Structures are given as structure tokens and as C-alpha cells.
Image (tube, rainbow, N blue to C red):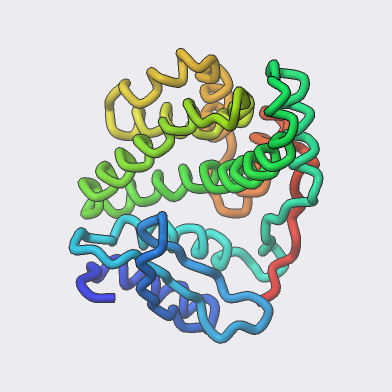
Length: 252
């Protein structure tokens, strides 16, 4: 990948040094995200950084993705764990939808599909936003040269998250508790950037109080990577997602 800043390349080099595996760059115009960084597992020869070709700087997106790997790889090998669903999440979401939202006859035929889609999204957000806020704190504190790119990236993600508030399948919508992480992220972004606008829509959606609770948990726990699992577990307990996932030892 061309035109990455030396600081961003240094993060990738740090990943290579910690893992003993190179980072492979792959352009991918089908990506919905700007960049993803797949950790080498089960004997894979390299980590894979996929990025959507663009003329805009990708440093923030690459640095953000690199942060997840660095927080894992900087731990002792015995303390490295992957996050994996247990398979119970879709049925839990079905129960939330069945008991918390009125459904038309047509909704019942799509309940399982919507529950599975929502469960996948909720598990992804639980981990990614909890740890992602730690990464944004690190980038803001240690890499001020990325500040303007970080602000633009956060703005883009906030705009995308707003679509979740109106996401529907028939009369079904995402259960309010599962919106907690995105509400917490909006509050976090407002605080980080010194504004108040991102959180406003979540008050109307009735999830801002839960978002504030999750942000308070983030603030209370130590920032070290060794406490990332504790952070995710505490968020899961507050949302009602305990048991939806497990921590599996990472196998390089």
C-alpha cells in the first residue's frame, strides 16, 4: 500500500516483530469498511490487510485495525484469546424480538433471519466498540498527527451507525439494549472531539442511559490490554449478552 505515513507503517512493523509473520497488503474494492486486518491463525503464513482502493488517506483506518492486533500480541502468549460466538445468540435475539416488539403475521416468517443477522451484528459490535474505544484513546494520545483523520473517520462511522436506528425488517427493529455499544461510542466520540451532537439521536431512541453506563464501565477499568476481556464481559453483563460468546485461546 502506497502513501502510508511512517508512523502507520511502524505499527504494522511492530505487528510483524511481535508475531514473526509479515503483513500482506491486498486491495479489495468490495469492502464495506475502508480497511480490515485479519490476524494470522492456525499456521497462516501472514496477516492480511485488505483495503478499499481510494485516493483518500487510509492511515486512520489502518492504524485503528492495527490497534486490535497490537493489543492482543503485546500480551504474553498464554493470555491471548479470540472472541467467538457460542451459537446461542440468535435464539436470545429471537426471544427479545418476540417478547419486546409487536409482530405482524408476515414478521414471523422472517423472525429467524432477522434474529440471526442482528445477533451477528451485536456480537461484532460488543467486542469492536469496547476495545475500539481503547484504540481511539491510544491514537488520540500517542499519535496526534492522525487527529484530523481520526475525527473524519469517527464522523463517517457515526453517520453509518445512525442508519441502525431505522433498520427494519417488516415491523421488527434492533432491540434497544443491543444498541448500547453504538450509543456508548457516540458519547465517547462527543467527549473525545469536544462536542455534543453525536449522542442526540440515541436519547430519542431510549438507549442513551445504557450507553452512558457502558462508557462509565470503560472509564472505570484499567486501560491495559490485559483487561480487555474484563471490559467486554462487563459490557455484556450490562447489556444482557452474557453467555452469547466465549474466549478461545489464540492459535497462531
